[in-house]
Length: 512
Ligand SMILES: Cc1ncc(COP(=O)(O)O)c(C=O)c1O
View 1 (tube, rainbow, N blue to C red):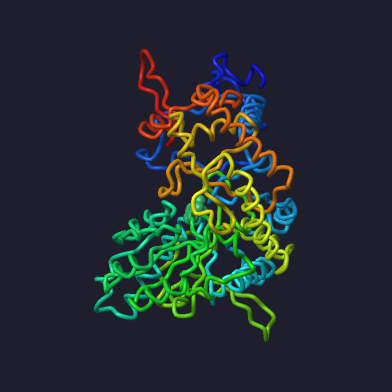
View 2: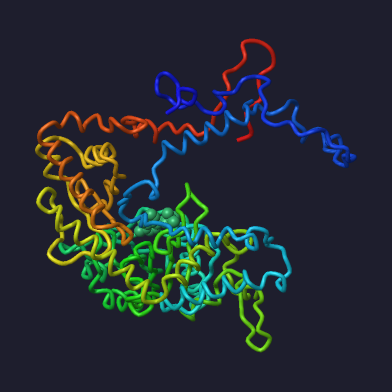
């Protein structure tokens, strides 16, 4: 790390802290074209009293700042990233090359449809491919993430009940989620105005069907489930579960975050699901981004199609033309502007088309094989609950014994892995496994990488029993050491504010 980038105490200053009054980047020459824009025409109440406090820096300062930051970051292009539930697989560069073609880069969402036939064809084909893979009838590519898709799925559930049984729709106020569910499931249900009811897992790590039967009734709007579940186990009773929910008048929602285990092999529609969300940034290898842009496609069975947002692309075979079709009268409405994150959708299309049906099946088979390989090799050093049968694309180990004997937590082991050049597995989730370490190797890793990861985790467990203090303070070799996560959560600081000037008028802070 260059000394110009990092402070003496190892801290990485913000752009605001690097600012030097009067320093500039490039100053373009003054224009010779008359300026039509006159800020005086804005009402005084909307005009700033003084210029915003932006950092004053040279171009080189800014380049070094961001290049330095990027070197302190971790990503799949740098190393193994077994973050369970997140499917951090390699994003093939051919997707990037295709997305970078100038024809795509210069598109505008308001262009007339005759001039964007290629883009419409991509959206149409992607929707058809995703419907083929899920067994669903129609899909919207609009939502920007899995969590946003969940919200849309829940709005579709409500619209369906209101349409088919308006007299009783209001009493269908409950969404059932398993106790192993990802946090976004109950959060989305609550955000959609539903009451969340938790169904227990049984001693095999699967939905407790007996408990589910006790929970369902005329108050049930639906059940959100991922299969394989967050323990990486296939819900063997899925057909019974679907029957129970449907018999109670509810709908079955599939959280597709775990599709990597079954893509090309089993279709959620055949399992009895009515609505599916797909995180394209997981199974379909588009970049995760830092909070976006992503894509959380929603695909549905025919009865739910009239409620989807619009517009969607249709193909007119007689004219060999693609065109937009506006949403129908029962739509729940738009989720966002335009048609989704086109660049992300394009990458997913490229991924599906470059692998083909057999390639996608191979993805699932290899992802499952890699997870079982790592699980088998780790069983000597960590407990692995529910290991009486093969797992799917991920598995959850438990550091319970390490905790009992040393007081260390799963998180301490995870921090020790960072020092050995690996991203940590997901920790403390799912909630039903004590001291959980959830590993998802994905299909894109080599045997050598899997072996190196297993070795590193075995070393860390050994260290826990021999030199626990080293792990208590880990990581020691990462750009930042152990952070106070409780403090960071309780006192989130997302906005830089200037120190108040000693004299004179109060400085105006940067626009939030
Ligand atoms: C099982 C599961 N469901 C839903 C989500 C939410 O997806 P997103 O992060 O795209 O909002 C995740 C994300 O990690 C997940 O693992």
